[in-house]
Length: 276
Image (cartoon, rainbow, N blue to C red; front, side, top):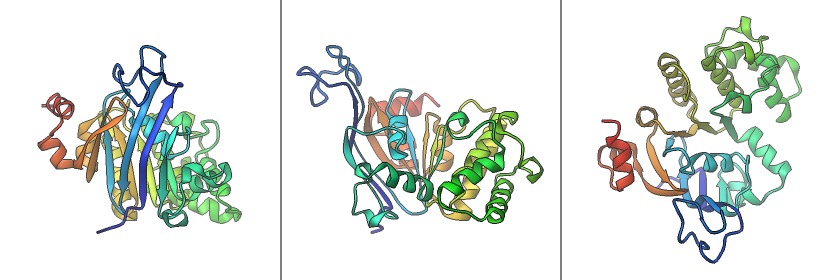
């Protein structure tokens, strides 16, 4: 049995103090307590990611999938839970509990992140190659020539001409901005790439280009990926396994073909049949 390179155990993110009415996640309207206004954004999440696989996370808006993704990249603190990485002290330390400095090291060396909105992942007024250089410098690279070469190599990898390396992402189309984000995320050869709704808002032809790029990167580099999407067509194309979330909880998980062709949970059935 293969060992996971990433594990999340019993993670919850709660906004609010809770009350007798809702404590323990009882008596909620979806994931919201009408008595004290506490929101149970993620509840008792358990998942594993294996080397070289793509894990899809699917669910409607408000299902908790983006909360989960933000917690994996330390963009939010969790209320409770464990998070273990093979490439950080061999999964012996809960990385939710390490210092800000250690989390920054993990973000710069083990994880890459591509946000739905490129504004969160890029400095839009900096040049594209400077965006890549920034992440490399934060990881300790100091040789300017090596950083420049790596930046140019990555821009070529994501199909952006080196001639445009000094242009700012604010001048690029949405699809090109996503490609710069991907190049930046790959800059320090992370074993894990996180992608949050990366094709949302893009034209269909541009979506196809970005998805092809993601597939080629996974194939060529063997990176493990977690991909969040509300679009089951994206999940079908990319993911080996899929997790379905609703109201902050994982309600179904399994091989992607199995989930999409024979969904067991009523909510998953509604999701799948709405595409037919």
